[in-house]
Length: 406
Ligand SMILES: *Cc1c(COP(=O)(O)O)cnc(C)c1O
Image (cartoon, rainbow, N blue to C red; front, top):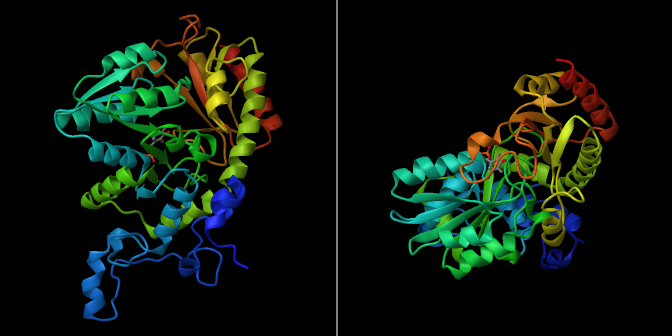
């Protein structure tokens, strides 16, 4: 009997797929995980094999270190097996590198790219910097306004960058509708699916052309590696792979092995973090110090119906805004937390808190969101980890006292 990757895996549940995906016998040998293959030079048997090397450009064929080795292939294949509709997955040295490389795959000078107004800030900066410098025009849109979005398309619109829920502010949009409109207009849709991962949103099956992840977050899961991925069907996968090779993009086998280790527990961590985040979000929503919890997983919250309709899971990341107060009070709250680290990033096993100022990173959408009072604009983003939610709530309760006592 073999636990390794096989066709039957595709019909199994997500946990079973996560355990088996990418574990081909030819890559693992007699052990459970593929060893770390540190390789630049692949040695060939003879000159005939050498000549064959460059002819077949595909994972699983040795050529040269830049095209990867079994450790990277195993990770790439595992991610592909978790993404229904994917023909393959390209790995990048960070999430931002995945977004940039995918943009450079589908865009040409003279094109227009539509970017969701609540995108991860480096994605916005990429539009206004790298892409604008190359003669590509970024236009930002409110993803909650489908008519306004549709009206922004023109002859030159080549691609749309989506992200849900929105970075920091967590708005949930109608992803299948946004993707369908893009397709009708002849534009390529890209989704930053870092929040949900393919376990929570099956992007390609819902009409997205290219789905991107910062593996740095949930897949790594232990706050000790940087990596990104792009998965797509056959047409876009071939283009992504070609562009990544032209840009010289490769990830280290050591990091790929770490990402594979993280991946094997992804479903269990996400399930627990979702459960804890929901309990904490619910608790926060009943507190007088809190004007609004920004969490589409929370029943009754804006976007909850869309999340329930389209998503099969969530994660531990959400935000909230205080009822009044000021930046100093908000920072007192964050500084008083003992179980939450203060830091960027998220998706690790440990909880984090981050003061947020979404007003600085948007040009179309209101902050705070309607119908929240304009005075209630000081927010915090929490990344809930694997600590006991009871302890996290006690910590937050203590920090709320610091918020109130100026
Ligand atoms: C962190 C993050 C990225 C970028 O990932 P890096 O690996 O840090 O470059 C992209 N998108 C989202 C939504 C993120 O949170």
